[in-house]
Image 1: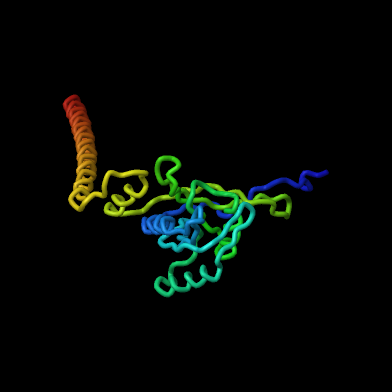
Image 2: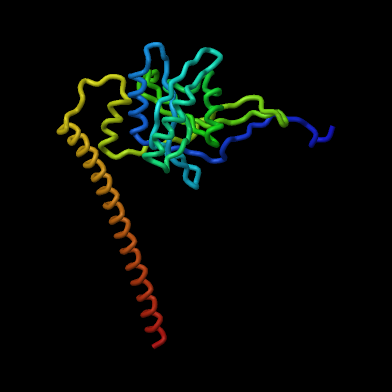
Length: 247
């Protein structure tokens, strides 16, 4: 059989280069939905809203939970509720579109492929965001995935989730709240003065780093200046010496 006639297994990526950025509002909203979940629900899932830039970066700005029921071999989503919530959100923020979905828990589960398949019909290349509200690693781990298709010839056999780079974009005030959310236990919530103190400590540390950087730059410039003067003096002395020999 010729080489071109062989049938091989192939992984087809859903996107060549994809990364994600998530805003803290999304994380806070997911944690709040998890706390308010029905007693029988083990996890919460929902829709992610945002935009996709030209360089393939998915900006996740908003989210909402979607009621669901799941067992070991099937998952049922309230699709009508999902579409109604999407329409309501887009009335307020028409530029926000579906960019993927989220679930609470550490990593993907058996039912994740079924849910991802649904969102793949809603939007190309959806991002799957997982938030570990169970603190199984000692803190709330947040990860993002995309799906890769396993093909045998022209047949799609299965889907595989692969982690993609994820950045948390937040201002300093939001970071204080996020640091509290992602830890398992805290002694007490910081008041305004304590929050300001923590922010000032970080600011002083940044100023100290900038001072050291500027000091190093000044030292390097001084060395370059002295080297330049030395070269100029040597060149001048060489020319004067040559002129004296001619005379």
